[in-house]
Length: 99
Image (cartoon, rainbow, N blue to C red; front, side, top):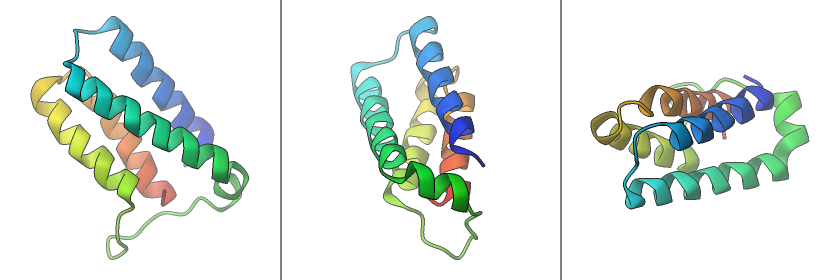
């Protein structure tokens, strides 16, 4: 999993948010917070992640970002199904990258 793929998926999420059905303010705020957190991690670890992206096994604890992404994904599946597939991809990428 590459950082470029994650950035591309984040961009796709932004486009989907702008062009899709309206999203409630609470969900939009959660998405913006997660996006900012992911951007911060990527800017801090860009080089390290690009060269050492590893798959996370099921016995390793999930990071706070992954937990946050999974929580939002479940919420989107119910309230905003048009966003859920894009967001699920992002959550999966975070898990596989070990972020």
